[in-house]
Every structure is written in C-alpha cells, then in structure tokens.
Length: 359
Image (cartoon, rainbow, N blue to C red):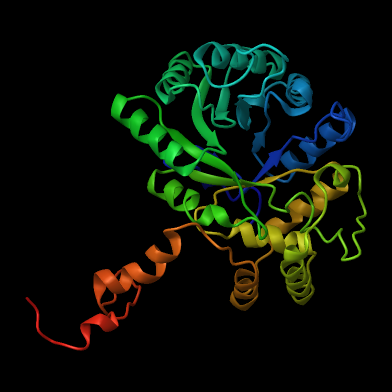
C-alpha cells in the first residue's frame, strides 16, 4: 500500500489517503513543535509521496498551524482543490469569552470564518466537532453545520472525541431531520489505548463513520524512544505528557520484539497494527521533525503477519466496560445455541443439556 492507495471515508464519496498528515506540531507557539520551514517541508514530503489528506484545528498553536498551511497553499496556486483539507472547531482562543469556543451556533460560525481566513480558502473539505459541548443541544450544532454545508463553506462533517451514545444521537437526529450527517470520527486508538473497541468502533461501523485514530504511537511511547529506565531520546514533549507506566511495558516489550522480527522499527509496527484494525480508514500521523515524519510515512508499506498481529492483540487486550464481554461471549450462545451464524460458531448453553423438554 502507498499513500495514493486512496480509501473512501465512511458513508460518503470522499477519498483520502490511508495516512492523514496531522499538524498539531506546526509552529512553536506552545513551547514545542516544528518551525515554519520544517512544517512546510513536512507538507511537501507528504504530498510528494502521494498523500492528499491534511488535518488541523483552530486551537493548534493558537491558530498558527492553520496559518502555516494557508501560507503554504497560497504560494502554490491550484494545489488547494487537489487536497482534502480538514480543520476542527470547539477550542477557545479567547480566555474569558464564553462564546469564543464550544459548539453553539454563534461559536461555530465565528470559528469557521476565522479558520477559513487563516487557511486562505473558501471552504473546508472536512469540519470536525473537536469535543463534546455538554451545554449545547445537538440539534443546534447540527443545524449550524448543515447551514455551512448549504452555504458551501464546508463539504463534510466529522466528529471527534464524543461519547459513543452522543455520536449515535447526532447521527440519528441528522438523518431524521434531513441534515448533513457526519462521515467520520477521530478518536485515540493505539496498542496502549484500545478501550474504544467497546463502544466507539462498533458505533462508527453501524452509523457509517470512517475512523481516524489519533496518537497511534501514544505520545511517542510506542516509538521505541523510551526505555525501562525512563529515558527518552526526545524529552521536549515528553516532559509534558510523561512516560509509560509499569502496566504499559509488557505491550512495549512485545512490540519491540515483533518489530525486530519483522525488520521494522517499533513505530512502524505500531502504525501497521492500528492501520489494519477493523473500521480504520486513515491514521493521523504527526511529527516535529522531518526525519520523524519520513520514518512514520514509511510504515504505510508495512504488513505484520497473522502471528505477529495476534501477539500484539493478546498482550494489549483491554478490559472493556460492560456489556462488551457479555455481548461478545454470552450473546452468541444465548441466541444461537450452537449454530454458526455469519461465519461465527457458537456453543449451546449448558442450561439446555439436563432436559430435552421444551414448554
């Protein structure tokens, strides 16, 4: 697979690369990140390899990330329409202003106008709700987004970091009202964060949402930089997000072993694992240095064997919330009593064995 092996995003007609360029590191305004020249070099590297999907947010480096992308596109006439450009709203750039962020209509409209200005474009291909605004009726947010689609300012809607039940509600309301539904969901997903498999991943499949995992290397913990002694090659951001806990090391150790066996870096093995998970459309790849980005992009060609994948699956298996185990283990026996359905075998419950009498 290569970056130009495009994939259809969710229940839509939008096609994107299997890796999306994440730009949270563009700009040094947060005290860490990539200088402008390096950020531009990373865009060039990604596009020249055939990638077409770039993701940013209004809050990234206080809006500088969007401006860097906008300036890059402005210097290259004709490029804008050839890429899939997405940004997010919710983040408040104005301390003390209750309407400066969030998902109310006033905030949504103001945020999209500001993002379009910084990006130097008339429209966004994807506009993502960045988080859940508990105080705003979902109908208000969805109607505002539908109006933006009608106005031609956004093409598609995405959801990020919402609870599964809220995302499901949003999809049902949008379809019922005839408004624009979401086509994708961003969520944290990696070998060290698999609890999304309980509710979010199945919900996304049921409601036509393509999944874009963020932090697939768990803030670098799966990159091979960290050692059991606590050391890390790059401590700039490590000082902010910390390092792996004792419960993480069995997963990291197994990842290192599998990567060595496959002849790739731990980061490449971790990216290959998450990219092959059911429901995943495109993996968000970010970096602070050009060499980091190149190494991560190389992973698009990596394929782990069934045995290697199984080892990683086993060591990283999460404890999921109820009723995940009940639905997975009990439901087939309860419902199918030993029959094989949709290729899945079941066993009859032992409760049925003592007597053949049925009433």
